[in-house]
Amino acid sequence: MCGIIGLLLANKDQHVNQLLFDGLTVLQHRGQDAAGMVTIDKQDRLRLRKDNGLVRDVFQQQHMLELQGPMGIGHVRYPTAGSSSQEEAQPFLTNYPLGIGVAHNGNLTNTDELQSSLKYSNFRHVNTDSDSEVLLNVFAESLTNELLQAKSDNTSQPFRMQDVIFGAMEKVMTSCQGGYAGCYLINGFGLVGFRDPNGIRPLVFGVRKSGGGQLGEVLQKGSSDSLDSISDQNELDYCIASESVAIDTLGFKLVRDVRAGEAIFIDLEGNCYSKVVHANPRHTPCIFEYVYFARPDSIMDGVSVYEARLNMGEKLAEKILRQFGDNHNVDVVIPVPDTSRTSALQAAYRLNVPFREGFMKNRYIGRTFIMPGQEKRKKSVRLKLNTIRREFEGKNVLLVDDSIVRGTTAGEIVQMARDAGAKNVYFSSAAPPIRYPNIYGIDLPSQKELIAFERNEEEIAAKIGCEWVVYQDQADLEESVNMAIPPHMEKFDGFDCSTFDGIYVTGQRMGDDYFTKLHSLRNDDAKATRNFGSVRSPSTLGGTDSPTMPKHTLDKIMVDGPKSSQSPQRELDHAMRVLEKRRMIAPSF
Ligand SMILES: O=P(O)(O)OC[C@H]1O[C@H](OP(=O)(O)OP(=O)(O)O)[C@H](O)[C@@H]1O
Ligand SMILES: NC(=O)CC[C@H](N)C(=O)O
Ligand SMILES: [Mg+2]
Image 1 (cartoon, rainbow, N blue to C red):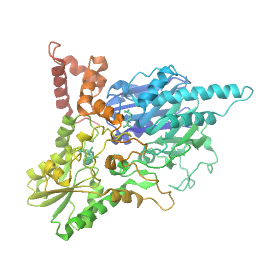
Image 2 (image 1 turned 45 degrees about the horizontal axis):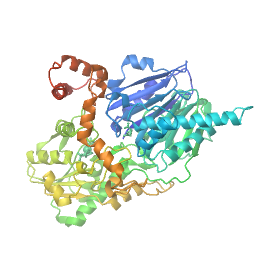
Image 3 (image 1 turned 90 degrees about the vertical axis):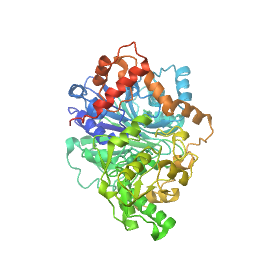
Image 4 (image 1 turned 60 degrees about the vertical axis):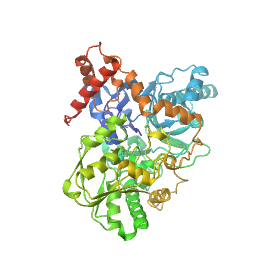
């Protein structure tokens, strides 16, 4: 679930680099593997920096100084296609036509077909296994055709670039299947934000007065659907982002969400054009954004993520009460930090039992679910959380998590609760059991890796070692989000709940060859082998699956490392051990 951002400033002497950096830092929870940004300088040169690592590791002072210009896009990556290699970090660029970059969140489900059509019909070269590079080239090809057409139709007068762009975006949306929200940067013209015809992945945009001034009453939150009422658009800075939290933090005012099947084009003069380019959009956003991915302080499609999570806690508690009545025997509710806190708080309130912080989180360890590799995820749970013994000793504790996916967290946490002296350990999940792969931007390619695959609640409880486990019902989860839609907003056409019910809004069915191939390419073992394959020399070391190590550190480890007489696997093991050791040292801020 990557994070994307695009920025265009009215004052062409200003630079977007610091705003991009700050925005990406705020979106870091959406991707920890790699980060990148591209800007366009005064000579129309695209300036790119991308690498594996967290935002703070990837952009050093010398990179920031070079990332000049008033327009740029940025990306934090959590891979769902190809490998974790540095080459597949984003943004991707292409020179033709004009010089275009892309930052993409989501996952295309017809990458292979598109790639071979680009190669054999359009003679375009795609250099990686990334679906995002394909998404870029499909647009580049369509834009080329639209530009050539517009040029031949309008020999005597200039054409309108917005028409050309919307024509190209229509082709993108009819050709590209899957979930995608993205931002294209077009040299000499501006930024394009877009969202797939099902609105699966989120995207919002906002404005501020040039340089950061106040907009006054014109754009009170949620009140304005267009920018028509703002007289002098030349004075506006624009920000497009995955989540409203980036818009808020950078001092922009949220205008609205990009609609399903819509593209918005912001030109260099500050004019903003929008069009729903897909003929039959249906708005079915990914419900897992509300469960886990988004920050609670984000407003997504008009819905406060925080409020939706409170509702999830309320409904979860009601299910526990339905199942056990008032004899539920729970002494204390304890959240599994961080994401479940909001739901756990409300569940405790509804159950009328104390809410206690029994686990303390090491703030320097990132999110474990989006880390690559099961060993690393497992180890990170232990490094990340520690117990406060007095909250467990002799008590019947109800642990609340937002979701149970592979069961890595639940298994470790239950054991920790027992080690801390809990009498009985109950576990509950604010989301229903996850039993199906995700194909729209969450890296859950393999059913067999899911703890709820072919297991019922009793079997899951036995597997994670607790007395009982209770999951949210899917209808209650959907209702939790629907209840938080403000009265003036349109209702959704439904949700993408495919990881819970196996119904794919883009029409795939379990058993299709697509799933077999996805599993074989992206199960944990396959990924480990592929990422291992990319560790060949210090120059390609950005390709290891280290989420936090800057490349120069990796280079050094390989120089310090064992001699080549050892097997490649042992060399890798050694490098990983050194990495693990060094990761224990907290980075300085
Ligand atoms: O069953 P699993 O495979 O362990 O996945 C589920 C867990 O992973 C996530 O936490 P994560 O540590 O990623 O992030 P958080 O700190 O935001 O809760 C999620 O909140 C669950 O706790
Ligand atoms: N999680 C995502 O949004 C991933 C984007 C893209 N599919 C990639 O792997 O880079
Ligand atoms: Mg968690």
